[in-house]
Image (tube, one colour):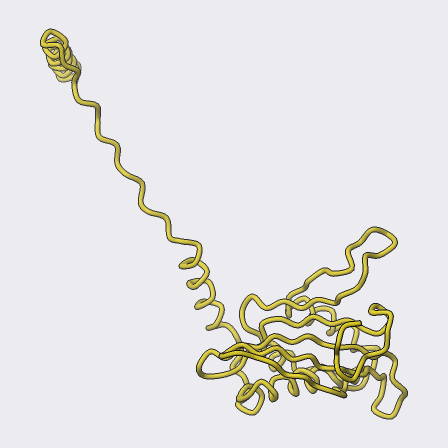
Length: 208
């Protein structure tokens, strides 16, 4: 081993000395080029494809139209206290990456009034809340607009503790839906109520 190392060193010195003698610089070692990084859009598509395979299959009657999806949203979260909701059905309505947000003004303690959550966050909240609280959310008016495979639904609602009780709260859900060529999905839900808006829910949904 010592002889081999010595021979290599001598050869390198001879090559370097010869190059300098001729006024040239020995070639620098060629660096291997780093592999090209996938684009953010490609990575997002790959993540989405994986996530889609994990979404529970939607009921055909829930996802065949935008109107059916909205009806299913109200139905799946409503029920008496102690009744377990069908959370797999709930999950099946949302496209991967969908968000939900209650729209309020900033809180006196400094907390933001708008703090988006995932459908899975809502499931965690609902599992506990619905154990002790009846919750019936009923649609009272709907306004639909859209273009191509994009649909936006403004849906007025009333919340009661039981179907016969007086409304505890009135407000409007803003529901964004998409069609992927096979079925409809919820992409986003945001909502606000009369207390936060400071005005009754108008029949026309026109912002005052």
